[in-house]
Length: 81
Image (tube, rainbow, N blue to C red):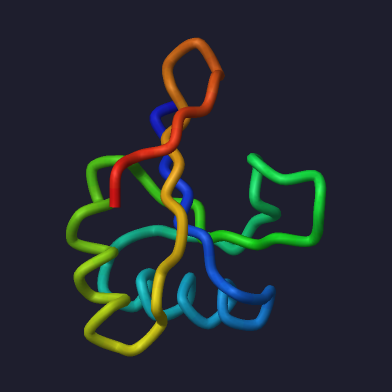
């Protein structure tokens, strides 16, 4: 359960970013942001792919937002940008 979530500005951007990352060999999916009760969206991916994914998303002008990590006990913690 060591997932990471990268916040994006809309569902459309999350879907596009997930397809982009998957095309680069990093399995990803669009998901509702687990840290918010509002309509926020994120890309969910493996924690091991996080650093490379953020770098690639920035390079492709996806402008990643907040980053959250799901811990082994199921809790979430915000990662430093």
